View 1: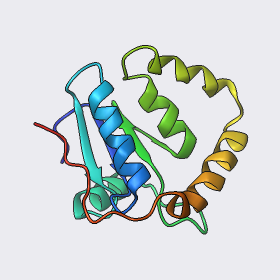
View 2: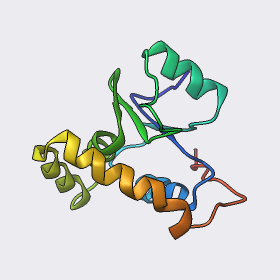
View 3: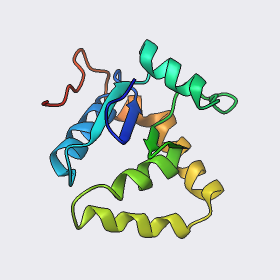
View 4: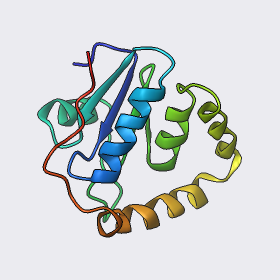
Length: 128
């Protein structure tokens, strides 16, 4: 199980996702984040422990576990911003937008991310 108080589950087959995790790792305020492949056994165990199942028609999502609370989709992305250095942490201001609208935008981008960014043969592995 994760060792830190923040855990990010992400699609390691996606270049955009891998680059995003590298950005997060480079801009985090503290060294207290676990990064896990969404497709790993450990991620599956965590999702089951939180009683999480993906919304209908969705294979994967960005998942952020922050102090024992699970966030997905746009909420995960914006909550992750809260643990980044300034000015990135200010992105949390967008949490005021209704979740349904944020998640619609998130899903529209998510459906197309593989066409914008091809898949990767390598995945992000943070420095210890």
